[in-house]
Each structure stands twice: as C-alpha cells, then as structure tokens.
Length: 201
Image 1 (cartoon, one colour):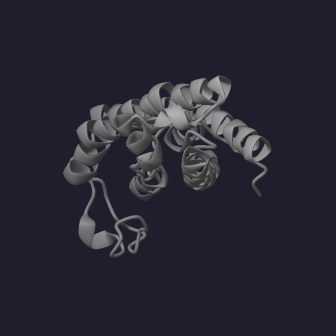
Image 2 (cartoon, rainbow, N blue to C red):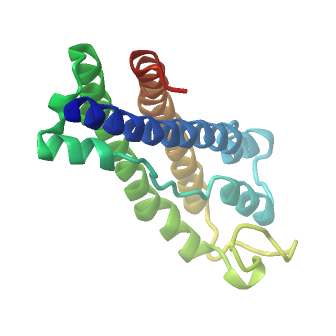
C-alpha cells in the first residue's frame, strides 16, 4: 500500500516535470523558428554588393541570441539516485523515462552548451569589436542611430559576419530539429503514457 502511494506520488511529480519541459520546448521552437527563419545577413549581401553599415548591424542583431536550457529533471534524478525507480511497475514506462532523461535531454544540454560556446567565441567578439554600444538601446538589440557605422569595416569583416551568422543559424536550426524535436515528442509521449497508466489528468 505504501509503495503504491509512493509510486503514484512520484508519477504525479514526473508528470508535472514533463509538462514543464513540454512547454519549454514549444516556446523554444517558436522563438528559434521566428528568429532564424531567414539568414538575414546572407540575404542582405545577396541583394546588395555593399549594404549600409546599419543594415548589416540590424541583420546581425536579429540573430544575436544566446539560448539557455530550462529543463526539469529533479524528480527523475531523485528517483534514480535513491532507487525509487523500482516503484514504477511498468518496465516500458521506466525504459522510456530513461531514454528521455538519460539520452535525449543529455543531448539537448550538451548541444545547447556547444551552441552557447559558438555564440561566445564568435558572435559576441564580433559585436564587441565592430558595434558601437552607444548607438544601440539599453538592451543592445535595437539601433537608435540610423547613421551608426561598423568599426574598422573591411571586406574581411563583411565576410566574417556573413560566415559567423550563417554558421550559427545552421547550427541552431540543427539543434532544434535533431535535439529539441525528438525530446519534445518523447516528453509528450511520456505525458500520455503516465496519464493513461495512472488515470491522471
């Protein structure tokens, strides 16, 4: 009886955690899709041989996003470390939970770290070297002076910003497709399994 109560308590907590993760993935995919729907700098140079400085900076700022990961795995970790996974009687559910937390979420976390490192190593240095902070708003993502200029602009800096932003976009979209989507599908599948298995809403 006590084990049954503990099993139900843990599964309720898992369900709450998975719902938070599912909501996170939906929000993140929406933001990524809207932010990186276009390769802003690449399209700009395709249209003009020598775009204005403000146009390049504007395109760069549209992709100047660094993403953190906000996932909830505390209940599963607690169950795993304390041996409480044994309370879940369904071996299939246990297996699917392990796949989600130990494999899919780990991939999301690792690849998100790689993306953040790329941002810090390439996007941020270009911003610091070539953009005038006084020409932007307090958040640093909107141009206040239409005549703002790129510091030390050359053909090399133009090629750098094109390469950096395009590579970052491709990487972020790859993470979305290969990491976020499988994890999101698994989270939703687990929600359905738990609700059915334990008659929860």
